[in-house]
Each structure stands twice: as C-alpha cells, then as structure tokens.
Length: 74
Image (cartoon, rainbow, N blue to C red):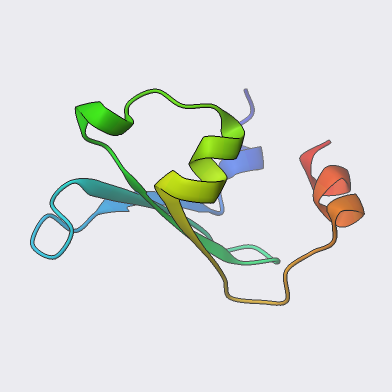
C-alpha cells in the first residue's frame, strides 16, 4: 500500500459530540466527509448497509458520477 495514495485522507473522532462515531475526511478533489458509527451493533456490515444506513456522507464538492468514482479508485 502506497502512503502517497492516501495522503489526502484524515481519520478522526469527536468524543464530546459524537461518542460512538468516527469520521474520515478526504481533502483532495472531490472532497468528502464520512461519519460512521463504531459501536458493537454497527461493527459488521456490507458496503450497501454502510452507505445507506450506517454512515453520513457529505460531499463538499459536486458529487462525482459513478464513472468518475470508478476511475478515481484505479
């Protein structure tokens, strides 16, 4: 795994306001914030469950299309 590939990602937590949640920030374009639950009830899920019910995803820029998202992951 290349450190360069992930240098624009930040993981964190705010235990005062969100004690059972953590977040990931992607600061490179397209920028996105993902807040998700980390308690035992939410410890295991598939991608669809995570995206649709266990996380809050906020795009800071225009949300990329499916094609753009696929291109950015390769």
